[in-house]
Image (cartoon, rainbow, N blue to C red):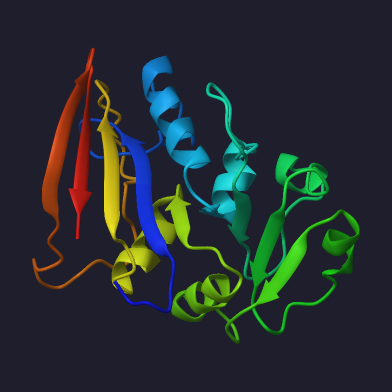
Length: 213
């Protein structure tokens, strides 16, 4: 792990066939016990990061529930600043620290600042993930959990920024050419991006797989 960036944990629940949502965007795969795992992880990190599509589709709070603990800083990747002002993360930005990451040319961000969100500009047209990690490190954000969609996950793997993977395999088969997989993007040409299996835990009808880089 590079010293100039936070430690990154990628967390997700997937179906048996590797999907994180149905073709209609439904992603409620986790059992109640797995949700405890998710929120226990959230309270242990400094920040939680997702892409704008996750917010647009699920409208999550990205806070700690099911267990007691401090809410992490919420970081949303939104290159064009197109997030809805009615989304939960924006409506509660004055209560829970929220950072919008946009490209350098994005305009009209004052409306988000007025709602209490912080804005980080990083990358000319697309967000520069590596540079963002350095910026967050300087803000004393040392541990991040990524709960992104397939596209966000891809960029973190592409840039070799994932230190741990915690995946819950749930007892569902979703199928569908348009259903979102754990990792989207153009994909790697070769089979080389390997992780080491650290632990396997069975929770009723689910398996929690814990990998490290």
